[in-house]
Length: 454
Image (cartoon, rainbow, N blue to C red):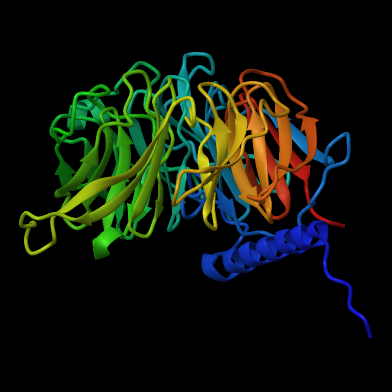
């Protein structure tokens, strides 16, 4: 039997299919978690990767079905955390009702107080709400071991019971740690739970990053602000802590007002820093970690960099090797800058929205910094918050447009768009997927779309 050679088009299609299958398979086997859980900012691994499968690979013109829409979350830009049959967020003006009001101080809904709120995952109905502190919130709650942790705009950190919302303990970054933000948009991070500890970033001179006992709030260690360069501004940035095991040393990596820093997990000893990526307006995107590498980017014309963490020549602390950040490459702002939509690393390629307050779709080869594709403006306006699931990128644009883009480094492929059924402000909160549903927070509103294959 004669076999015809594959055409270039057929080879390209086969290559794309194989690539997506490998990515989906590796995500399913490596996650080791319930795919429906989204317990903190950008998911369980803080990488904006959802391991669910069986999702729509294209959208109809009108978009996926809207299952329900509810109001009453209060104002704010916080995204969502999902645990079990509950979802959690923060909002100013959220109703103060709770199943257990004992010891609660009644609050006026319009007095600028932010509340941590719990809603039903299946219907969005209110379960409880707990006072956090003043200011419209930006950060996303974190759920772990029956407790929920949330940080308010003015540095009020609270721990509450997941079932009831009853307060367990509280701290204030300014009062307890001399905290400071690099600029005026308020604290925005999501606390990180790592084992028995809670990691957060007050931004103080003697407490840039702190580790607290997650059960009691007691201080485990405080890490002082290191001198890493003149770029940027003192204090906390708008990012959230991630874990790295670079060079075999467990460490906490954070983007602060002065750039990227790393502290040894066991005691907060400073390991390394990188200043060049800092700007003095707002350093926002959560760093991306893989192996001995860290990728970081900021907006306002700054740019992006890939760092390789390597042993330093000087002696380390308590037998731990001293480390330094070696710049593999730096991309100027005109080539790549991620403002506040975040970046996601799939296989060897990084996907994000490029541009200051823009979401121009961009795919970059991580190892080299080469641009795999850059199609131009893209379908939406403003910045784009990015999430990956089932072979596709979900871009949520600032103007309320959702876009589905195939995560394929060989070609930019737009698979559908729709405008969300709410327009209450800048569409900034990052999207969340759980149980085949796409959840979108829009200030006081919460929308749930069905994105399952049927």
